[in-house]
Length: 387
Image (cartoon, rainbow, N blue to C red; front, side, top):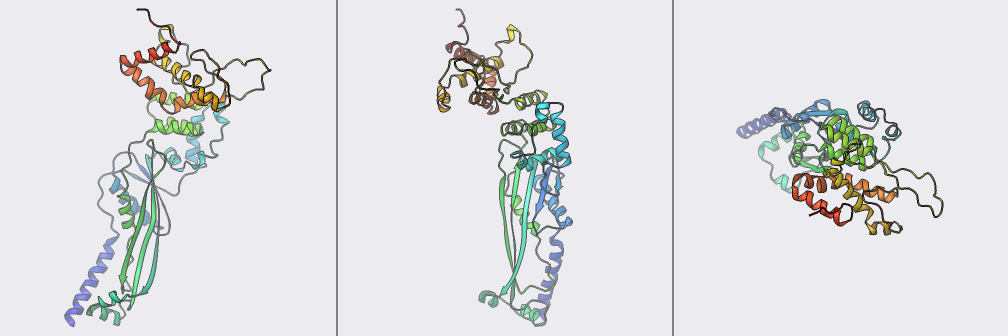
């Protein structure tokens, strides 16, 4: 009996020592790359020390520096307001936009990228619950002599099993082309039959780390795509703020600004019956310089693509029918003032069709340019070249 009891006490000592070492964070490699933000919510990791330990675990998992955020940022945070104000500058039309309203106010992760310059945001919501219950018949049968002695001496909770459950969810926002966050569930239950009274509970960060490892590594942000998505979603100020603070490419910033400034012009009144309103060219996101182009530049790939994008909308008879309008022939490359056509023009740029499906093939190979010229010639927009 003495040997059995000594062995049990030795196991108890090892367990206590193990509990003391359980909270130690893993050895982390030196963080590199852009920082990621970490927001921790729930009851399981409420202390600052526990949150710092989880941040070190996240650095070990991702290899990125981690910035602890007290909460998901809002449109009223000073750093976010400063970035938005700088993006607006002296542009009166943008200054009138209420960028704090919906849907812009729901861009919490994006606001963290603006205010704290992070390349991804992890939001960890984790709770810990504990309950005690009587031992099951199987657990009673598994007791050994040492367990009985510790129960009789009051060191262990005799006849009781403790269940510790850690549950929650991790959301990961990355600023690539996808807007919706990646998700990973946190779920871990540890059963301790007849636990010792002085035993420390398990570390919830272990269960959180296991869930973190299920998520993909944050990819490199696609800030231009994010900025264009924001502009298309009705948040031009935030789109501009992303471009100005996160985009290094000056030309890309200029294109985003041109897109952000594009907006349908409100009608000033109903035209007189029988009088056709003079088409006006709306401020559509076009990646061209506002300066007049020389005759030689008129047929650059960007000029040809601009004409082609406009023609795709103007000649779409199904689009006219869907809006109850009789199709009307329009001069090649002329933007009309109808709202549904202005939306169509804007979509060609925001969707990437202008750059990805037209400009890049045209500039990338002579065949691409020739194909575009042939399309416009067949449409009657360009004169066929003399043989």
